[in-house]
Length: 444
Image (spheres, rainbow, N blue to C red):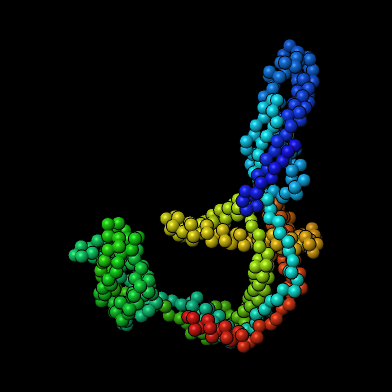
């Protein structure tokens, strides 16, 4: 067997085979004799069918079976000899089997990337502060108040930023009214769309208006405007304000605390503090894990099999699209976002695949494994969380084909724990925290 291996892309190879005609003829002879010894045809006893008749009746079938057998054997030998680790199914091409000629064929396959993992111990990490501040609690209490906020009609007042306005509108191009609508609700925020056209200075144009007033806004109609002939043209939007609504927030006091199910305001604040402590602890752990992967991905560079990335990207994009559809976004809008969704999905998929391969390689190097007992304990914990039977959870995981994913996730977590144990972690100073907060506020 002659074999040539060619690199034709990222993690992609073509194996070009040429098998001597003697090898093929020998295999055809063996297969033909097997058929002669076993086949039964009308008028002939088993094993007594003339060879010429066997060749006439079964020759093409014998040839196909021999070709498949030779291809499989050669492919397996090539994987072993060249230490190739294929991804997915190979593609066969240029299969040429002619009697009296060498048997040639090509196999195209993608392979897992080859790379080394080094310098993963002693990673320098910064542990962010998990201290719960008064500002954290104040923000949480404000959030609770916002959840209970109510829209009320402003009967005697003027429109202010972030109000909701109920109005009628007309779109005029020159003297012609090209579109009108009644009782629409718009948010008094810059770039809110009216007639599918963003209004950049909406707040300035409407602020200070009262119910019953009319305001005019000059715009260039967007490319999404209903009337195609008017897209891009200058227009005047005439708004007649019929009602002003404003969010009002409850006072955070004893009555509020009791309204949402707590014994007192102090009880509410204690519970809020505990929740923030848990959230911050998880956030700090996630941040450390993120730092680990950022460092490893920066240190260890390698290509990925493109078809593998494409496969998982399509799955991820489909899930995003399904989630948007469930969230009430129209099919037309989802289709507009398809390219952006796929690009974002491809980036995140590639990052996750690289991170997964790196942690897997570290696990192999450090002999980090997940035992069946640990898997059973995890399944039991899942069952307890959902108040169901362990056997039911296991059956569901097996049915979904998710047991291997569970093992991989557990192994990755073990690797992260190992890297954290080996890392050099420095606590973030309060001065750094304050500086970051000042910088964040200055950007707002």
